[in-house]
Image (tube, rainbow, N blue to C red):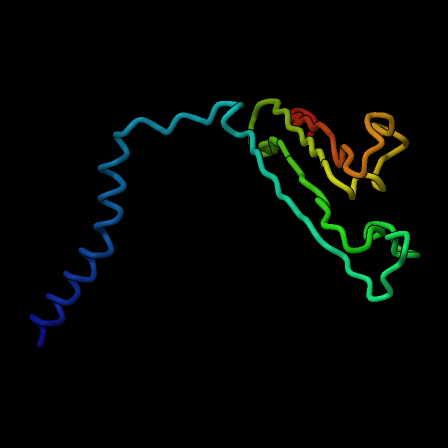
Length: 143
């Protein structure tokens, strides 16, 4: 009985110690190089389309009282959004700069213009708009 408990203890100890030994063996490897500034930039986007049907079949093709869904029975490109961003690294001991720029093209952009920006670019149903744009700075001295 004592031999089986000792053998079991040795197996448990060896299996618990082996990951630590494996980590120690890998500690001679050079540390992973930090990502370059441009490697941390993220690019994403999405596309959304739709069709609004009206059983009243208005003769002018407009849905009365609707804003974004004002065109009856016509397929629309609601929005195609492209986002480019770089989050700041708040754990960095150095100054770090981040940003986000999000632009939209589509029929939804007709009603999302901020203070008239890009109003005069086109008068078509599909328009351009800047949805979000900002910059950030991490200052480890102050924060």
